[in-house]
Length: 178
Image (cartoon, rainbow, N blue to C red; front, side, top):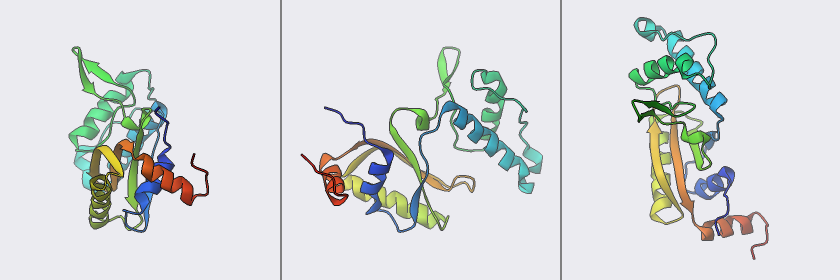
């Protein structure tokens, strides 16, 4: 029987493999929240003086239900190499042009950041995830470093977490394990 595992539980299982100071910076996002992430990224891009020549036009009103309002912004962000997904899937000519954010799927997907906000700490987080996977504590669909200043996180998409690791966690937390 498959039992849903909460993001917090997976983080607590992983925590022993991660550098001290690591935290969840992002987890589940509704499509509306994903749209606000797109808007915020574009506005942050525009406010950086280094990007004066590559400003992104951000409409005053964007709606999840109308891709025409946000798709040009998403395309512009992607052209500037931002790692950001669509709030909903976008198809063009019968093919998927942009997938919806994995953060809005019914899966355990989250971003890990570190209070020091350095590339070295992101590499340590990625290595910690690799160690947990080698020890068969957890299996990932993806572990991706997102080094841009606006993100500075390690994106993880969890395939499974071992029942042994969960039993150990629940025991440590004082829950009875049958």
